[in-house]
Image (cartoon, rainbow, N blue to C red; front, side, top):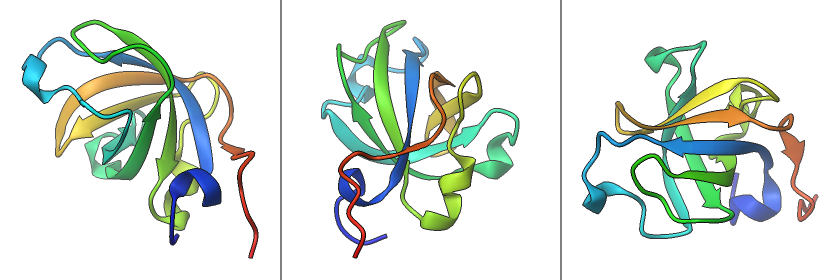
Length: 114
């Protein structure tokens, strides 16, 4: 994948529940950021790079938000969470948020085919 993930990649729409075990200084300060994550069923061995776009609210202990999750490598797109599937956002190997897919990984409406 080259360029802006929001324009070129499939995404999964998820409900994010931020854990309260991290320092307030460690919550994302940007609406869009790169990090890592894995499907809960795959466990930490399934860790891969993701790009997260927060759609509402503010991250913080126990906060909930809606977000889009993009795989940064096309081969990982099939590992994005589908409806009802659990996903873990991590900072390195440390879980920082639990998510649940609220729709299947859909093509971004802004997808451009070249």
